[in-house]
Length: 127
Image 1 (cartoon, rainbow, N blue to C red):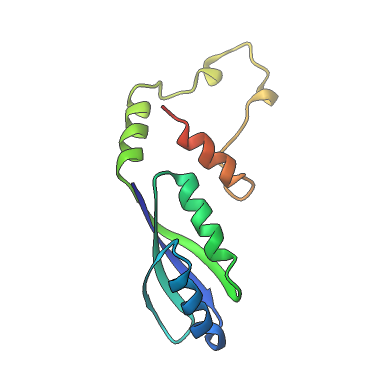
Image 2: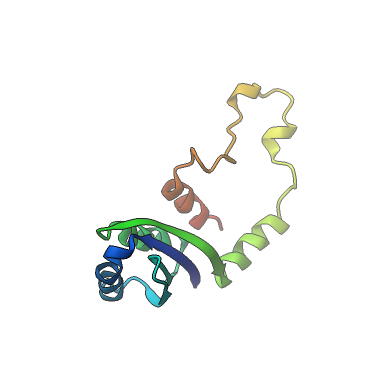
């Protein structure tokens, strides 16, 4: 099970409307808010992909300016991924291959350009 906290931002004049929509949307749990339009919620999911789908529901609520994950916890997934990391080489095989064309090496570290849903799908498929 994955649990993530989300900070939702709206304008103060839309706070009550956004709070109502958040409480009725059934993809998150409301916790608290302030008069500046900041709302704290949590979402749960069986996978990163499911959490991202729920985050997209929150982002689509009218008058939501931003909805950003602040903290995430994954009990089962984390254990699986740690096991994969523990059983793998520290350096990917492609970086040890002297015959590979460096232009063919794909860098996956830039989250600004990353397809997060595609990444989540790939992350969820790690065995």
